[in-house]
Length: 353
Image 1 (tube, rainbow, N blue to C red):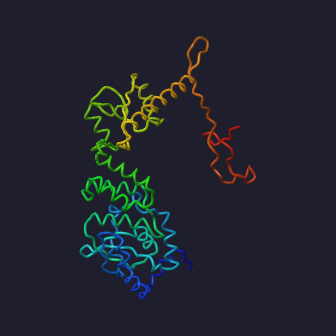
Image 2 (cartoon, one colour):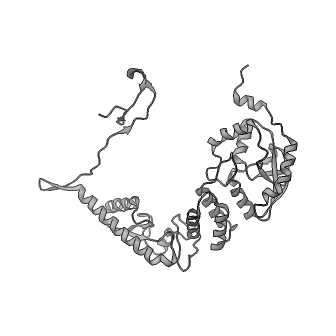
Image 3 (cartoon, rainbow, N blue to C red):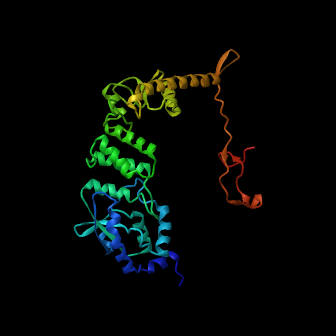
């Protein structure tokens, strides 16, 4: 009887080197001392039926990244790495709640492993627990890592749930503590975005974000009877957009299209997304200069599309369609086994000469 590789793995349960686990237990307190508010209690081999990984409590926006699972499975089958910290859990009643090792947990499922060894931890506060879950995705391979989106999502959730105090000091401290993937410029940009999300002034400058809800540009527009999102404010008859980039062509195109649809001028308002108090007036002036430069450029572009022919004004968009890149690579016997497509093709896959 033939056995597939996956089924072969499932026939094998891991055999743990208990001496090496004991060696890890001696190192573990020092390892976990790097995480504020975390207390290491023990390392135990647990039946995975009592270890629960709740996907709603995962710190990554993309949850388990499945294309990483084969790499981790191969690593596990080739030999358990006792010098790296095992998955960690917190004892909650009669079960253990998973804190780190989400992708490894999926790998264990696919390997059919019923047991594994876990570090058991305790925490000084719910916020320290959440910080730890983020921090353990920042290091050690093979793992799947946090993204900027993950960090932003986690910290806005902590702010919303009252886990993270809504102060510049606490936000700044937390960003520099957990956002290790980026550089200082990335971290300062993240801080600015979180301050805007929280509505925390930077110095004497009010901040906004554009994601709707409290402290958003949408809320401010509604409160002041300004149009936003084109025609999203149903309480006003005007149309308009809120800009945070003076040269964003997507916004300019939306404004032009909306003005055409409604046969009226579109209103543009703006805010400085990441204000610097000492430079704020100059930031506004620079924004307005770029706004006018972009408007002038668009006027020239539009004039280039308009021409006079036989005494009539006509419009021509100077863009020529040249087809799709060849993407069907299946062999074609009529082409001597070469790929079905090459060069560029039309919508039906026919060559464009």
